[in-house]
Amino acid sequence: MYFRLKLLLKSNLILYILTDMIYFDNSATTFVSQGVRNKIIELTEDSLSANPGALHKLGNRAADICEGIRKETAGLLGAKPEEIFFTSCATESANTAIKGYMSRNKRSGNAVISTRTEHKATLECLEYLAKLGYEIRFVKVGPDGKPLIESLEEELGKGDVALACFTLVNNETGSVLPFEDIFKTIKAKSPATAIYLDCVQALGKMPVDLSKLGADMCSFSGHKIHSVKGNGVLYVRKGVRIDPLIVGGGQQDGMRSGTQSPVLAGAFLEALKEVSTEIDESFAKVSEINNFLRKELADRGAKILSPDDALPYVLNVSFDGFESETMLHCLEIYDIYVSTVSACSAKTKKVSYVLLESGVDRKIAANAVRLSFSRSNTMEEAVEFIKRVDEIYEQFLIK
Image (cartoon, rainbow, N blue to C red; front, side, top):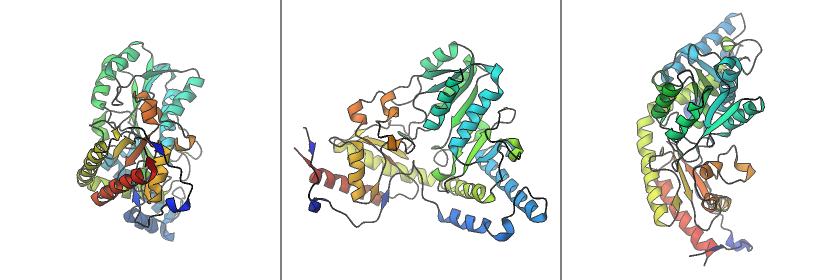
């Protein structure tokens, strides 16, 4: 059956529905929790607002707060305090890890291994390295978006690999990296190769214990776990040497200069505490929502593009008869918010490179919409979403 979109030229065809907002765009950013808001207010009291680098007692108190936050954050992530560094965002963490490792460890090799489905924060770093003369080798991925082990072995077999860069959970499809297999393959074929892991979409949604994970460097983002924008974390395993991206006063052991912010670090920690406490309950709740939407949408002819074993917090779906941006704006009429591709690439209006690299047909990828959930979403919202999708098809599509 073929459809064409009705032209919405008459004002009476455009319906502005007065409903509560449904926010299914949590992979782009999450709303700030009340606990984080309260923590920010607490940490902005005058008596806590001194520069942590100052020598007077107020500065010492601020420095003690920063160190306490660092220690507690490390404990929740399974790391040592000296392995944790607060940054402005995961993009800064990625840049520091990838560029910093290659800059500091020039004798480790001239090649970097990754996939073409990585977040732009990683891909742009790799493009930067390529311009400096480094060799970038891309591992092929399967239909589920996961790196093919035979392709990884082939690229490692060429030798001279200093660094491997992967993402634990893909932000567009929810595909979960088989990291244990990746780790074993790398250490068997190229033991000296360091590993950088983007853990942004995994944090608070699945267990992340850095002491057991095996990665050498990891990036995290606060605004993906209900903290404010502008705070992230970089993990660098003890013994791994990298050059800092930002230099200046030598704060945070010289790894990330600039006046430390107890407020932003404390906001990250508060959000991390909340998601860590509710991780099992949230996973079960979101899984129920995801399973319901998968079935209902598939029954209506939509194509589910997220793999069956994807993390349930992300559901990528292609709507027959609607380009992705059109569906996004149709849903927006009902105060329902989703996304097309990663928010970092959305305004380019291009088809998702992640889906194309995974072998999805371009026409199907052009109709893809990403739904992404948090612990705040409900089954009632999922039911309402399906109801509105039905209305959109009834009103805006004709044979």
